[in-house]
Image (cartoon, rainbow, N blue to C red; front, side, top):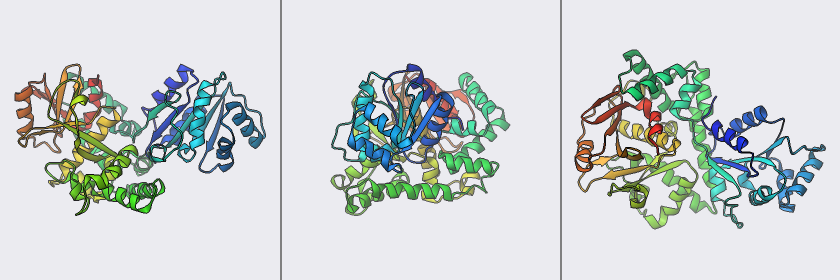
Length: 437
């Protein structure tokens, strides 16, 4: 399956610098498969090491940090000479070795141009309590996310549909009704399947029949995440708090005002008790925090209130799996309140994939704009609606108060432009990437 992240890999290869490339992200998002495919296709020689499984290789970094000695010791264990000028080294599961991560500084500073890619669980890399400092400036650090809806369509071979969506977005003209309905149905399927490559592969193998899709795949990934919470914590009490926060998110999203409230985690919950757990989940890339501002000024980041925020899962499939939302409820467009939360979570993960900061606005009354995005046209408000019933005072209140060049409403309605508001179907959220400054 083609991933947009391939562009990052090609750019690194083209730059031909000594800097090792470190790719981190949550588990099961396809890091290993993508990097392996890239290395095999773009280098004459390729060596793969899993530091969690290849204990002998991991121990080399405990003995020495000198690149030449490391390569020599690897050669001895492989019983062959390595031509480093034509070889790319891929070290996987690097979160288990502090010394390996430290060694990247010396590989970067070496006169020999070693081509090194490494990958690891974001949770492990960022949350292991390393004694040594991270080699800042000596590593090209990149973040990888679950597959976006755009990548989902590409994996299904729907490239012509993608082009059609982008064409109508650029011209703000309605899609033909049959194509609009087709795109909406695929969007609904994506909400159930999510962006994990294993889940998408299963969906494809089922011929796109959502009824036959094995939802246990997503459930097993959730179990794996919870297992990691135990693996990368110092004690059982800490892991229990992280799990409680993680599983409390649906209750937060079910509220009309989705501001995160610690009291929903448990009766005695407070910031002091659970703030670290939230930080860990954010660092692990398995939740997304959207911060509040009441001051709509450039640069928005300066005016954020980081004590007030909303929290989403990083994958729509995981949200619907944890909540056990029925397939028919999504597909048949059943009118249930939580549907709004599902759509908002989907938009949050799409914006995050595009590296657009998650920021929201709420008035002193009850008007709320789900997301604000800084563009060349200024700060643009984005309102999310789960259906074609789009009545809401919030966007109009915001438009009257701040007078942006235009507003954006994401819903199941077709493309259109009326009363200074761009109507964009939820399936076309990926098109907003061209607004990013």
